[in-house]
Length: 220
Image (cartoon, rainbow, N blue to C red; front, side, top):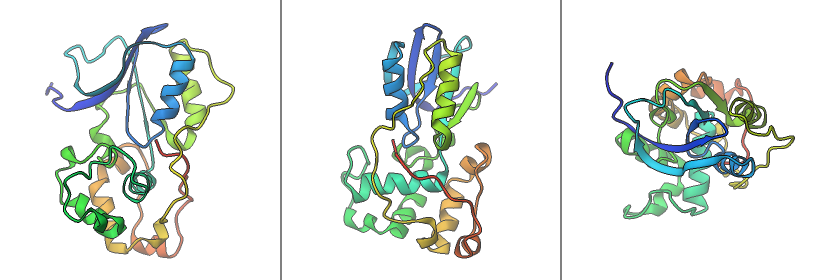
């Protein structure tokens, strides 16, 4: 078996039942963390950043993550970190950062980077989640999926899941994006679409509106 040399953002809990959450930026992390805190989770590491997997691979832990439609996640990250100037967007030291406010230029900038080194808010989700987890929840169904997680780890199932850290109104929609940019997004996030079973579209489908509504909303 080839050793996993990637590093992950990890939340580790040992009570009431041991579990590990592989955090993926822009998928509802503030919401999940708030619920875990309020549910009485006993954290060993609450917000571990860029940590290697232990040799044991968390064999005796319930392992979960949350993912999000790649188109929606990217638009949300760009809106939050570039347009709204949110912290942690990895834009320090970039020459002419104002050019990134053009979404097409922003995607061109991303596609020319090493995917493993892209800021975690835009990095492909498949690089932020190890190959084997017990449950993959979705931002689009976070209330239902987070309640399932709570039931699996012995925490109180909540009647209502709060939405934290809203990005605000979207500045662009998929139908507004150039076909060439959509193609670049499809290339960069190909493994996300395939591994997490999200539909992939081409420019023609988008122009003809032949795609289901992508759930926007709170971006964490």
